[in-house]
Image (cartoon, rainbow, N blue to C red; front, top):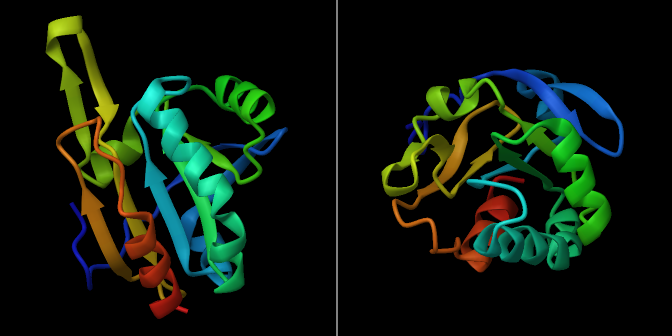
Length: 158
């Protein structure tokens, strides 16, 4: 897992914006601070609460110049449907190949259900130099991030 002070692992992945686009982290550092919010799976209870909470707080992130991105192993088509059904305005990045959860070391399994390699609920804030300024990872998929702490980290990374 990248720690505070580490260079954020660069990546390229599909991004759902209503369309399907390509997203490369290093190409978006001018939008920093970047909030990378990993979540296990679309349309699940805690994940939808998290995504909706980031949406409700989106203006606060924009106020400090931060850009929010959600990341999960779902396809970009599923993520676009989620955005439509739940009014999520910020982009969602698709990690169907599980490369991002590997690079960020945030993979988890739900062995009792036979489901493997989902994203741990985690948040990284990346500054304009590509450095991680905030890192939070939960081993409990029912725990949400401290949204105020993420906002403060984004404001500090400005």
